[in-house]
Image (tube, rainbow over all chains, first blue to last red; front, side, top):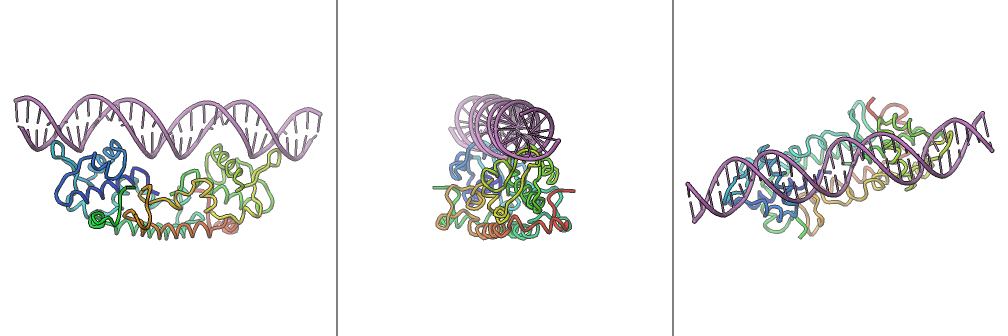
Amino acid sequence: MFSKTCEYAIRAILFIAHKSENGDKIGIKDIAKGIDSPEYFVAKILQNLGKQGLVQSQKGPSGGFYLDDSCRKHSLADIVKAVDGQKIFSGCGLGLKQCSETRPCPIHHEYKEIKKRLIAMLENAKVGTFSEELEKNLIFLKRK
Amino acid sequence: MFSKTCEYAIRAILFIAHKSENGDKIGIKDIAKGIDSPEYFVAKILQNLGKQGLVQSQKGPSGGFYLDDSCRKHSLADIVKAVDGQKIFSGCGLGLKQCSETRPCPIHHEYKEIKKRLIAMLENAKVGTFSEELEKNLIFLKRK
DNA sequence: AAAATAAAAGATATTTTTGTCTTTTATTAA
DNA sequence: TTAATAAAAGACAAAAATATCTTTTATTTT
């Protein structure tokens, strides 16, 4: 569904959102551990998300990653778009270059509805709204 | 969503189902053209699907690919499983190795419902049921 | 101001996916 | 029974995704 890069991106952002709620900044090592992901790889991903304004960071001692208020309002859809592009939002389920209402692929109509729900889910899910559940261990970002 | 391999696989099978309805056998070149895909690549894919019993073939002059009655009853889900495995059926949306009702990722519950619909769609879609629509140009397997 | 810290930037490596080409085997038709 | 045909099998190539390492830059603390 999502690329690995995108999965890490979402998990990293949610982790940062949670851990930086109190104003702390989180180092890349803690993030990698916190979401069980390859350290250097998430570093690259966050670097990229930073350029796109989806995460904040600060260099130097006591530096790290954090989220400002406006970033907390972003949706998971914003992250997916930033990482994987429009593909899963607008692409054809069977990979046709041209696929539309007037020239549909065999699964176009059903797939459209499913995609609609997926998009709605991603747009409703705001980055800043998961901290409490994470804190209470009702949801998780890694295996154990 | 699906791998390119899987997209080609589905399109190829539907194409063969359509073209072999009357007992004809279809050569790999015609298939590649018919679904606008790299010839040698679909050849490999069909070879693999053949081993799994999802398509029939015959060598030699007047040979080619075709589908018997039992294959026409297979669902798109069968093809997806044969090519991409269980991943999209059972995998976690955020790539967690462990993700379940009791230890869910942040999007587990919503994602589960979406997946349920996707699976239902793929299981309901039988390979043999698209020929008429293809014939009438109501659905398509390639761009133009 | 100097030393230490942590992210940014850039280069490199590995793996997986996608795509291509050549040789072999089976089958049919002449 | 020989020549032609078409898929099977195997080897190879290119591109993309994933992952790692090193050097540089910015910032902070001492």
